[in-house]
Length: 208
Image (cartoon, rainbow, N blue to C red; front, side, top):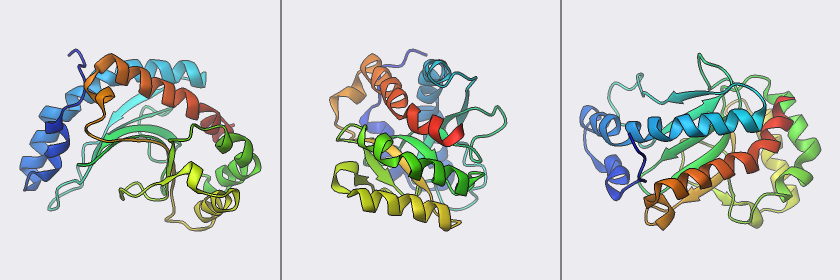
């Protein structure tokens, strides 16, 4: 499949009522696009990271009643899974697309990762573009612009990630459904690849 971009119908998927009906739309509308962009992004991430990377597409297999409010693909260094390791995500809610470097609550060695990032937070985070955002929960839509957080507030987010078992730390980009770049397949692929490249110093700081 040639990736020609995301459409409004992709985001409207999350307004479909019913678990099976919404999952069918995710499988037919969105997952083929994840597979189409995944090969390129996995290859780019592997070059940037200097290690083999693998594509994982969320299957939402544990859901029995409630339909998912978002869906995503993940890129990480383990062929068997991604949740226990730092990884990159591209995904959609109904009102935005996200590109994350994600440290979710299942990640191993949370304290060590947080300490590494705290030690270099000024250098790593201040180097990020002004439109990047930070989230503490991958299940919520809310995110704060990096530029709106003080150095102390940024440090507190990492301290919370370190000290609270359920806490998460995600950094990257949000794009609105009407952003023109989403309708241009090659432009979006470049943006996603550039975002992974921009976030790679944080990934490396956390994993080495």
